[in-house]
Length: 585
Ligand SMILES: Cc1cc2nc3c(=O)[nH]c(=O)nc-3n(C[C@H](O)[C@H](O)[C@H](O)COP(=O)(O)OP(=O)(O)OC[C@H]3O[C@@H](n4cnc5c(N)ncnc54)[C@H](O)[C@@H]3O)c2cc1C
Image 1 (cartoon, rainbow, N blue to C red):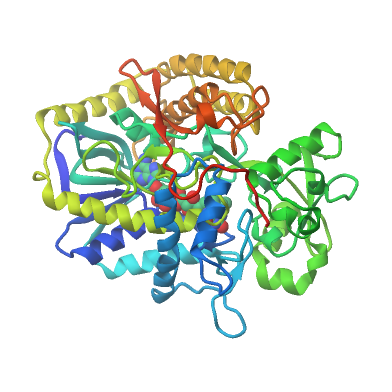
Image 2 (cartoon, rainbow, N blue to C red):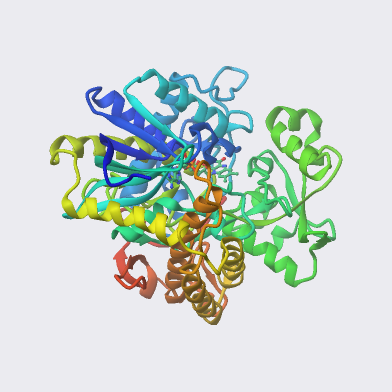
């Protein structure tokens, strides 16, 4: 294996071939064809998690909608933890990005008169979610991928796994990556690096996220000295299929689906979803924000009104009243998933569902342009925290987030690469690369490990579910931190038994687990200090929001000994002072 010698040099290196990474690649190629840009991805780009998004992408377009209303919904949905200047820019740019995709060939669903169709989505007062049937992510990613192919200058490293960022003199200088097909270790130098590595749902046992969503970018940035932000906010989606965690998209409720308990009762009317009057509630309660709906499930569980299933307690999603025609036309994929994975037909049967870990509001701390505190290092998409989502993301805001911030961080990274020093590694950065090769060769391959990756991963996931579920308490969070500390010590004793180099999944699983343990520890640290309930972070021991103490972001820094340190960062409030979360007015 090599690694110390530089294999390639680029102006901008994008890590990730999902929506954020590909949007950044196109933005750079469009800005200046002279810029040498490359996309590196641990899977073939079309297999990125973006492909599985179903419901849609938000952007103001309907006549009765307005930019200010989308801004307000996002701020209120974030429980006032989103930065309002960033949200304002995001909401203004989102429709432009979606229209740009239309011009690149994205087959958005239409109204009979040919205008873009929009559907209702949770926490959004107006219909503003663009969709391509219920395979929005597939069509969106395909559009970006095929567009990126137009630009021959975008070099791709498909199925390469980045294991380390090389940072010296306060700036990023490149990465170390494993070419999975051969197992060779390479060093790639770059003037700018954009992390677009997606979410980290696999930190938990039950998630809608793909197996590849292990938060690598967060782990890479954190270890390189860039702080993580808002890590205590993990979104549960209220409707996952039991056992598999496969998502039943919010579009199913957007199209009129109901949530009912063991008594066949639409139980959400008994809960405070932030809606002022009872009348509109019955019409729109299934479209309350995700955090509130997931919390209502726990309420039903406690009242004994959930339904026992082979895979734990569930409630039912009822689509039967929508009829076969509407289901086939608007949400055919929901039917397909139910038939294939549950052997039930939503046209005639109730769908068993329960809350499932879905999305990470926190991530690598960036500014409005995706810049991290490390010069030349940017982040965009789910791995970043820009921050528009605050304590709770609204459904369908994430795909446009990838587009808006992908393009923006790509342009900023290109600009940086034009002004910064020539690409190449300082002596210290080259030494870091050599250390990384040693870590993989000697610490992982070379050691006869007494601990196993699957065992530690299972324990980490169980710990996170117990410590940082829908409701949390101080003692649970502390116990979780203790357990994770012990798992981290055990992690030092793992070895990779499989000596075969090509596609060594035992090796990549070990590297991913390393990232996830850092992320898990940062989530619990931030969660234990936030003694209030806000959005997705619900502390049973501190049930109220506490703006006096906690209207603030928390940055998590990694110390030299591997421990974490928290720092407060003020939330940017511009035109919308903190208020009650009111939805469905
Ligand atoms: C089932 C599901 C449905 C969803 N539905 C919607 C929806 O309807 N609307 C909405 O707005 N949002 C939705 N979301 C959320 C949204 O899809 C994601 O937040 C978004 O697609 C993330 O895109 P991304 O570009 O940040 O990352 P991803 O699409 O996850 O891509 C990450 C990329 O990083 C690469 N990568 C990761 N680690 C490494 C490494 N170490 N080395 C090299 N490459 C690496 C991967 O190969 C991949 O190419 C959904 C999410 C899920 C899970």
